[in-house]
Image (cartoon, rainbow, N blue to C red; front, side, top):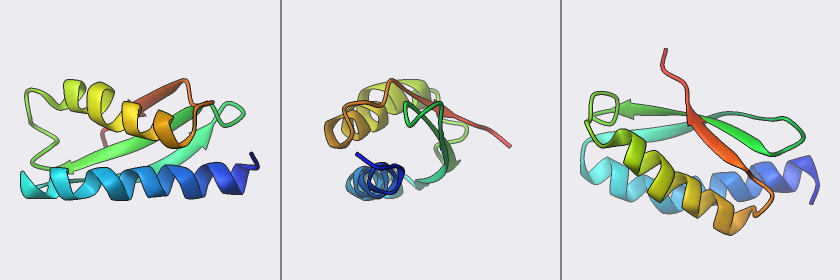
Length: 81
């Protein structure tokens, strides 16, 4: 899978997740894909930033969905600004 295909599939995964986050007043954006397309950096936004379960959301929801679209992804991390 090319880098461009990886990016497109990660975006598709985020589109699948986004409505659930938005229903709770949050959102997510893709920051970068690094380490030979195995690490995804995202930014949780809105209500997701201060949510006590955002790490669970990130691992159970976001990472799992991204890996469904792009199995080579090994880790998804949230970058707070």
